[in-house]
Structures are given as C-alpha cells and as structure tokens.
Image 1 (spheres, rainbow, N blue to C red):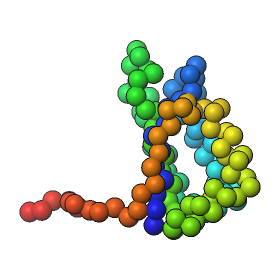
Image 2: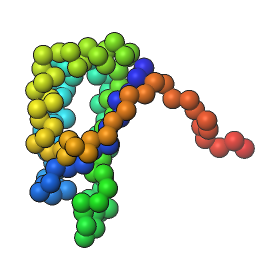
Image 3: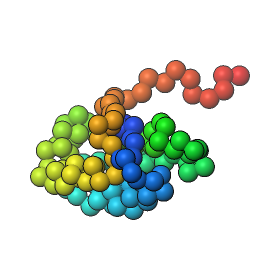
Image 4: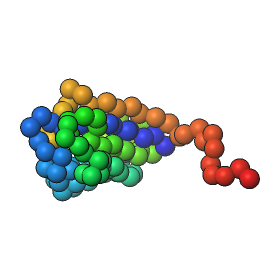
Length: 117
C-alpha cells in the first residue's frame, strides 16, 4: 500500500468557501469519474474548517488530500492514464499549484497505537 498525501492551498482570489465547494463538489467527483481515478483505492479530502480562518485567511494550508494505491505500480498507472491530464488541468482552477506540497509514502511505522496502560 502506498499513499499520496498533498498539502493544498487555494488559488489567489478564491475565498475559502469557494475553494472548499469546488474541491468537494467538482474536483473530487472528477477524480473518481476518470480511468486515472480507477487506480485509487481510497480518496480522502481533509478540509480546513471555515471557522479556523481569521482576518488573514490566506495564511496556512486549506486542506490535505490522501489517495491510497495498492502499489507503486498502481500509482504510476494512475498517472499514465490518458485522462490524468484532465485531472491535472483542473488543479489551477482552484489550487495554488506553485505551493502544492506532496509526498508518496509506504505503509506507516506505528510507534504508538492507543493507551499503554
């Protein structure tokens, strides 16, 4: 199992509400509707709460996305699909792609899993 984790920021000029609505109601459904998305076992969107934004709502990240793949081969196959370009082309419509941060990781090493007593 491998996971693609992305820290996301909305594009300039987009309000937090507009960003979260687009990500949830347009981009998410786009991903799962594609052949590229068929390689994803699980797709998570972790939205920053609107109540967390202050007067300077451009500070920090707006959310985290996590996509799970059975293997690195499946991750690469996801990107190799022809319609991956359609998903990639959607990103600048709502993300600051210059500040997109991502990492692909393997199964976690669990250090602590609940109370020890």
